[in-house]
Image 1 (spheres, rainbow over the protein chains, first blue to last red):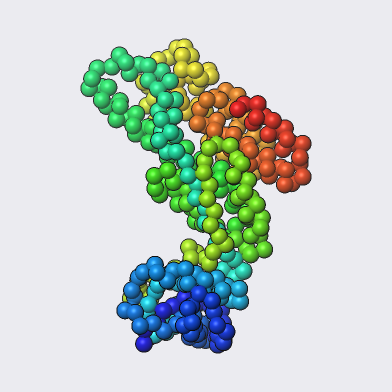
Image 2: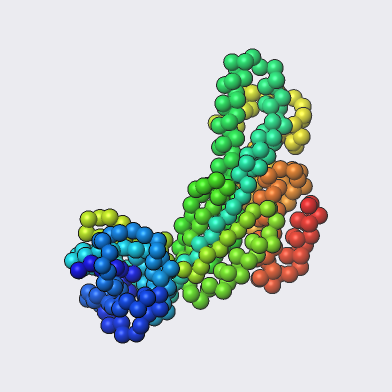
Length: 245
Length: 100
């Protein structure tokens, strides 16, 4: 039997209610000891990946989060029942530990956008103001070439260090509301920071209000917030073959 | 090491780079201050970090470090405000605004 999985929950009880987002498909709990994997049947090929059902998937997971602690499985994960049972058996204690760690917590994702080229230009121009920049005018071609390479290296290094500090400034402000975090630095053009914060449900409002401060903050950065979300970025689940879900 | 490398390349006299004495030719002057300020902030020594961030605004107002310092001071001011230290917060915001 092919099964579409939504996540591990801290209960082995039956799910009797109809759940929004499932499009009328019956969702049930596959129990293992005192926990369970919430699933639905599927006729699609096993482990097919698609984004078509991602909205429905998220609605189901968010609905489950109202009643249970959930270790959410990534969108559109199709498995055989025996793989799921093997995974539950093999990782039971990890799941228990994760469920405890994520109890009453939600995830917020933030992005900080800056104008990367402007920052580099600014650093380059500041660098050129130094005596080193002035001396360069008198250098021979060969020496100048080496120094230009060196300068690029220095600018790049300063750029990355500057990114670290800007990230630390932002993170200092939000960190106090989070019990865990994941920071991804310079992962794309103009993307200074992509961060995930795990926040106690009771502190969601504080986190949101703190984030709103950035909207009026000086600096010219652009800030984006997503959440509250299921804690996708704070769990890692593997099926029997070791492939991440 | 970079700093040493730079120092070797620099002429010994004069302050022609627009930076303060002792930092005359290195653009790391404001960067070092920013780094230090941030270290103090993360260590919870906020008063020192405010002094250093403010120093960046005063001495290097047109640098990217000043942009970062202004953001840091703004966020510190907000924290003060939330802690009920409204006067300190207002005074900090005034300092930031004066430098704009």
